[in-house]
Length: 480
Image (cartoon, rainbow, N blue to C red):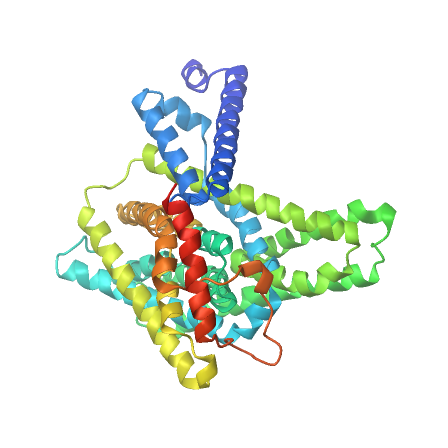
């Protein structure tokens, strides 16, 4: 009894440790937002906000190791993947669906679905097969085939938050922005459905012989989750339309109900054994288009600001924690070959995904709606890995035994850091090389789509103007 009490410490000491842990997290969040603002104000695009948050986490974790306070710091900075999935990811995914601009998104919906669903499936399978073959050829640590497919599924979840933020700063073609953003939104839903399907196959049918049941399980997870999300979204729309809540003295109730519906959708799907992430994504899309208009004007402003605030805090905290965890956790760095060849195979799978899907899309589109080659290259370059891949990798540590989950987790964290720092930091140079910016993303998003369900053709004069404006903007921060 005395020993356990000594280990845990008194209730007062535990409360103090918890307070210090929360203080540390708040300090890192404040520092991240301040640094991000300074970088954005000075147009320093080589270090995006997400990269800065990641570096802050790395530095704090590294200092904790050096100062021999790792054990106490780890106790303060207590973090679990349940907290990740239940509190941090839902507002980010909901905000993604809620903030979709309808015209560019739905005008390119066929292409977005092709990239996000068919393309993610291709990328997952190609990555899994290459990792398995690499193991057979003794190039890297050998994993069972189903676990290779699980790794392929989780690492195919893209999170181009840094690329999109620079797209917004410099202004880019509205169709390219819609493709990158739309793919990343639906891609998360697809990746988590694939991962969970492979996880069920591994636990129930290790031989993987019943391919038909794999397809059925995936469709059950994805379509069931989507149906749950859409159902909750339409239920909320009917409630707000006919309940008469849009009057002054009921605004608090109106806002509270609106905020609760997304979490109701998420928990309903999880309770049914489906994907809460998929469900809350489609709840966000439906609530924006059908429920939001039934709110009073003040409530519309509040819920828009609220979800933007919560998703920004969650996104920043995720990148801080990824950096902190990389510095503090014990990783399987001995499997350097697995990390190196995984990066190579992921790049190959991303290229196969983008160029094959673009080829299929261009086959059925008329000449004026073709996806240009430079947009395909920008899409290929925008495949950063981030929060979703990291969260699923955390889950794999528990799902996979014999240290396999730890190897995948280490490889994923290394891939996230490399893509966020290197690709995120070189986005401006990529834009300069491909010349894919326009006069400004926000001003033009949604224009030119009336009567044209696809790409708006760009003239040579516009291309030249675009290139000149980009060079002027980039020279501005090259001089800094």
